[in-house]
Length: 75
Length: 463
Image 1 (cartoon, each protein chain N blue to C red):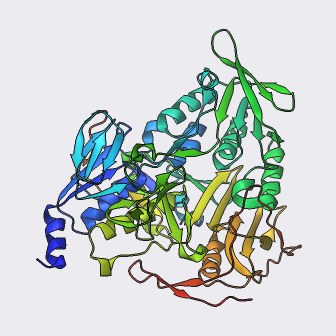
Image 2: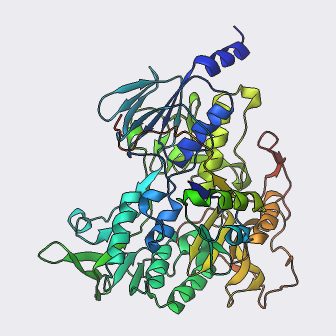
Image 3: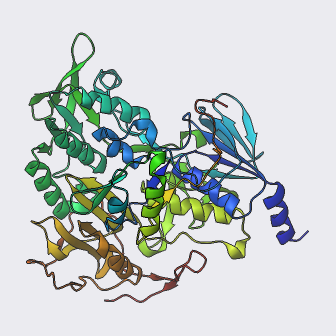
């Protein structure tokens, strides 16, 4: 699953790092590092983390079916 | 037909082409569909594969935690687009409304969004840039190559340029226990973006983490061995260092060359547009159907006296994409201005550095709260007595407060908002090395919260 955190919104509350520690980690006192390619097994945890974020900075892939260009299709 | 009918017809059957399929392009496409655009949507991009997020490339990817291919951007919704990938755009014909691709194909449009971004500035000597071990970091291929080189355990990495990207790479080298030398022409790291005071803090931080930081020097030559592998770097003070990896972190070049001859106001500074993200032509006239968003846009900011400012910030790409997309499918009276105060972040040496506002638009800087030695503080920037920007080190929760001070043109220096009064809170000259953006004083303040409400109103100066 795909995850992106808007780090310009993130204020380091660390709720996500408690709820999905394999995906979100604090780096130092308040900087956040995250796995943008989180394992699908972690979806429930990540959704809980996204819901708990006080500044709603976590965006999770909403697409069921991929609406995407096939990788390496030149046209 | 009335213009409202025309707009409805365009939303139903129109053709929109997005040139530049990265963060701004993708967010614009999603917003177009959110706003009810049901016509044909074409995404043109020079890289193969889906749009991906770049900030993790100089952070998570280089630490080895996340593979370079693992930063594809999440999709908020289906966009039902035709994707033309792997071929850059080669030209824009405003007379016939066509985008020309580099392979000769032509794509017609009714409205176009340009979000072609920037590319990494390469090392200036081509033969030296081609040495095995010399990298830039902009794309996932770059990040993948550099991550492999770091994983191989180089004896020393040379980082050329101590802006945000260079400093982040130096930080990761130290995290991975790799010896690193940073060469910077300015007197300190980050000084071009944040001024001399923060530059000194950044320099202390690098040295405290074991970076061999060399400021005020220029790298003159990268020397390879007989196999074409990087071995040594020469500095303009006559010294040399041995290094097997060099990272060229000298900023970006805006991708506007393809617009030469198009008649748009496009050049090395970006593509000029209005706050509604409509491009200007060479005469400074607003075009109706050409929109711009992201790193390549050069947009006037009313809070900074309508100066045309281009920003390579993640949030700026997202916000401009949303404003541009809204305006592409809205009548004149419903268009939004892009009036956001810029925000930026960097993570290095375990510290969360964030800024709000435009720190280069300042003549004074003052530490307003916290403690510099503890690397937990906020510094406010002012120009002629009003607050224009703020930078926080591990104090991100406070930036909203400072954003409000900027939006209301609050007097500088602002009072300390917490009991956490810094030991020395006297304003100092901001001292940028280059020509600073200078101004006369506040003319406008921002009102409203939603994009549909945000407007500026005229304001009086505080002194």
